[in-house]
Image (cartoon, rainbow over all chains, first blue to last red; front, side, top):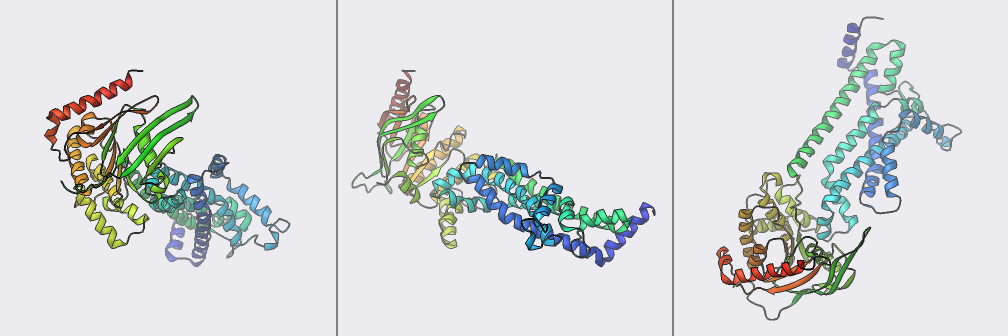
Length: 237
Length: 267
């Protein structure tokens, strides 16, 4: 093995040169995770809002369940999605195993509970504070939901970013259902695992640097938005 | 007198007959309101005063359809309270100003107007008008936290006024403010009432505040929540602050105090 400094140098050279293999992997990662977050948002946000303002039997149990699902182990999700999509599984006829679509499905399963749970928290907090205000303005409970979602948009964006952070950094599920096939289902995390075991440290490190860059950028954005809404909440108190 | 001079017939805005509200709790039923009878006429300024638990806020919330009575009858503008609520018959000012911290003052006032679908131009026009009415002209672009507590509460009143409901319901709006600010706001509220001719329901803990503001003072007492006295104020509608040193004022204040004491006698 060459020494670490040399590998680092090679890695940065790859990043700076915009190596085509590197860019392909990064691009696929972003496409898969962004699309997964979009799908998860379309399911998770209405679900979270319904849990926040709805009054139906089983609501508390659903809230507990959604909160618990936030901590789903990715490998287990990968296994379950694998079983569903495998040739003999219930969705085997779709032949989705080892495609980017399979990876998106796995990430949607992982991210939806996060977005739903955070959305519920945000909407419930706003609702507690403004329900009567809205009612005194002649609104029905259902009609308050879009108003609350719009006014909570900064906090909801935080929920989306948290979901994206989870999706892009996750390896266990996508490696099982995607299979880490070169140019087809190889994303940053699975490529890092593979290249490291092959001893191709330069590419692994380069991908790692990009991944950490994305993670830092996302988290910085989350904390920036969080700090802003906290400061507003404090000033309000 | 301005705005309220034309009173051909006293028209009833709120009418409560034998109103009951019982909450079922784990410790048995709580009688929040018991056999409450009251008429509020157009243009009245009615204060509700009494110790905690006397049902004064509960009664206001019944008028606003935020609570549902369990017995008796209650009409607002001749309708059920919930119909009146959906017709936006009233503006409600809560104890806490309840302004959205991430909206400017103008945008907070616009919120009900946005919900009700007023045109953009109409929204601007109304915001400008109500900000002037509560003496906050020029503060529309500020955020709530940039304003003092008294100014925030005025903004909250402006929001309740924005869609021009005939009834203004206020639940201890000045309870958290110091006395100097409160005096000032009371004066402004009377001026606003004179200019707009609205019917106002006002919950308070303060005897001087109730006597200074009201044409009608409703004294209430707890366990069960009920009305013990209704005082038609002999004071003129035009009220400078120093009216509080007059003989009539002191007499009314005395009667309110007596009413409150009588309500406590059975404790």
